[in-house]
Image 1 (cartoon, rainbow, N blue to C red):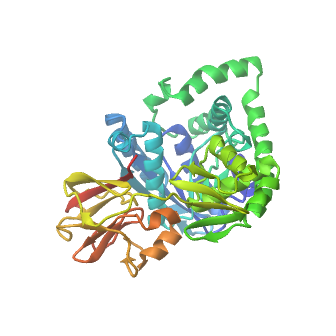
Image 2 (image 1 turned 30 degrees about the vertical axis):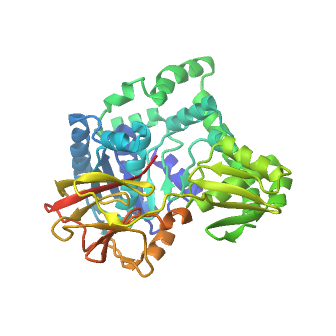
Image 3 (image 1 turned 60 degrees about the vertical axis):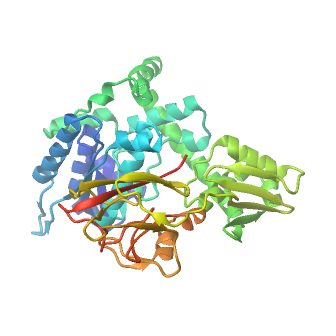
Length: 463
């Protein structure tokens, strides 16, 4: 298994020499195996390693048990590593965090699984910054890939979805993607490595579990070796998708900034073959939305019809409060007129408030060392007895914990905050000084310290 993972990492150029990898560890078999494999490979591949565990608080004592187990495993099995030349590699450092996923799902009015994923990845990105990590490693296996492909196939998908889970994308790597769950279990058994069982994995209320327990066994019975062949097929489909995307990128690169949005020659889009045109439109929307390319086929096809239509002033409403407009020979992708403005007001200390397009919730509590995130953070009640909310102003500066200070505008550009959000993100101030910025997090002067009374701030979009 070590050889397979090493070969896969080298073939995908997954971990550059000298980089730092943050390993996401749940305490389950897959993530424990991944952490241990990377721990053993780090001298050979010359990279640094850290670990992170996020407690979703969804399974009561079982969730707390997993957090304690993970901390013990990292301490006992990933300590200082002495090499044959006498060099000693440092112990793996663990970054821990937690969040009330159920409460957040209710507040955001989103599903538990979606909310858990959003909160987990927000924590992992923050932990990666704390650790100075270039990459985040997740323990997706070949089995996970098969389940994902079948889910996309059942729901309806193009090449992008049928290509399954990519080995690497946007700073996230999957070193175990060619390893089966059986290989993981054999590895742990041979080395006598413990792991925790997640009871929710047996719950067939979750779609992925039904695919795992009911669909895959039937397909393997009908065509033994099905899972392996599907993974190979997905790899070929990803190559096809990458080729088409590069052709589309050349078309999307013709776009130019236009006010707060983008403009591109409508005939260039209209004349392109459907597979190229649709991908170019997706790339343009991703550029406008700060990297988010999650746009449905319905919206993309409607946008392509607008480009090929005869109405030179046609309009279309898109997600993320975006409008598409024909302006004769141009296609304009711009923030929708009528976006709710952000007005100056006082923060809802120990309460909830709709402020422009955002819902801001505040709770009084004692800070217990949780990692701050862009949309959830803790401000010292001692240093910020009162908070005001206003839009960004020219010259505003923010110095996040552990980072250098920059203007809020530069932070927004660096963190890829979509253009249409920049003027309506709440800026929290105390005594005229910036205490925090929604989407960026707190300033270190006002961030709560461990044990301090704090304002627990949560910001979500208004539906």
